[in-house]
Amino acid sequence: MNRLVLASGSATRRAMLSSAGLAVVAVSPDVDEAVIKREARAEGRDAMACARLLAEAKALAVSAGCPDDLVIGADQMLSTPDGLWFDKPAGREAARIQLLSLAGRDHALLTAVAVAKGGRILWTADDRAVLVMRRFSEAFVDDYLARAGDAVLSSVGAYQLEGLGVQLFERVDGDHFTILGLPLLPLLDFLRREGVLTT
Image 1: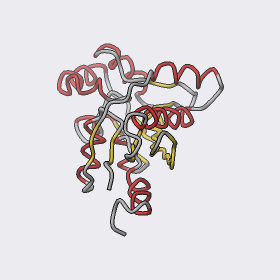
Image 2: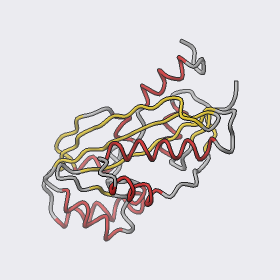
Image 3: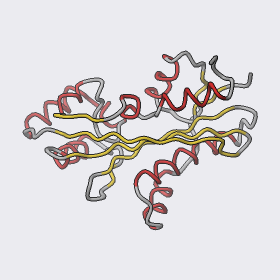
């Protein structure tokens, strides 16, 4: 069997796959995400379509260098009901502003996965989760950011739900793996059909 390659530098995605019993090699893709997002916006695409484009671009970029391997690309977008998209915050002050703007509101995490081989996309899937942040004080945000540290900068939402970030929320509706950034169950089903996993 050829290798299973994760086109991502995400430690969380790699840990999810490893915990599920998959031996993966991680390769960071050379993809300009800002350009893809800008073009998706210009074409009138929604955040889910943009997540799919990003996942496919990552899978294809890495597949070009290892055409015999199955390459998994994934991405996640955060969108509000009024159509705002959020990126990973550039620093703690940006994270603070973002969290205060999301307080008391709901937002969606839109996660997509694509698998490529030989420079073409074989399969894609996507999922969404809706999360409602509670109302909280500026003092709470300052304390949260001080305790969570720079880890908040690695997440599109400036939080890790599996850690201190859970204190930001009053309700979470959606698949746990989708929230973490990878629709894992559909991916495992695909890999079983491909013979990578035992059925």
